[in-house]
Length: 114
Length: 108
Image (cartoon, rainbow over all chains, first blue to last red; front, side):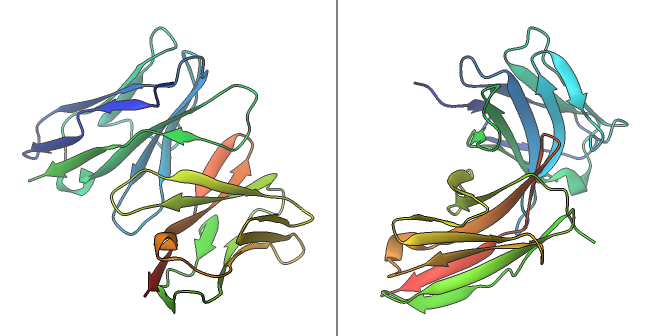
């Protein structure tokens, strides 16, 4: 079974440019998360989806970040415009509806903003 | 105060040694607890859940102390392959919050 797929794996952009990350969760997983991980820190939740509904986006900086999961399957996270401090790894994770704590993470998208 | 706090380490131990470290959490109503393992430049993966009665999985033992609001992980007979960052995770109302991780390096 395929795991969580993310792309791109690496992205280097200049500040003020836009960037988008894509995630395809494990088939059948209704819950999808976007986390941000800075070097030496643990993952920090940005947004959680239950199917196509964003049920927790309280940590998403909405002035520059947006996300969507239109058909309740794959998801896109966008940053516009990017700032130097956005350099981090953006992790997507999914889990089946009934499972409580085991999240399955993708390999992440590593963003460098110059 | 952060929701989940861990001693960042690093813990440098010889092969065969026992190493243990804790994680504290701030919300006394937290429902579930987990240890994740993250290798360098890789994604986190679930190592084990932590049950109220404590639980063991091979060389790994996890304990929960609700009164003092901490969980612990003990690794016995350390192997080189145990070198990684161990992330504590706490579930509150469907939100899984992570600590910053404890780095363990096992040396030959």
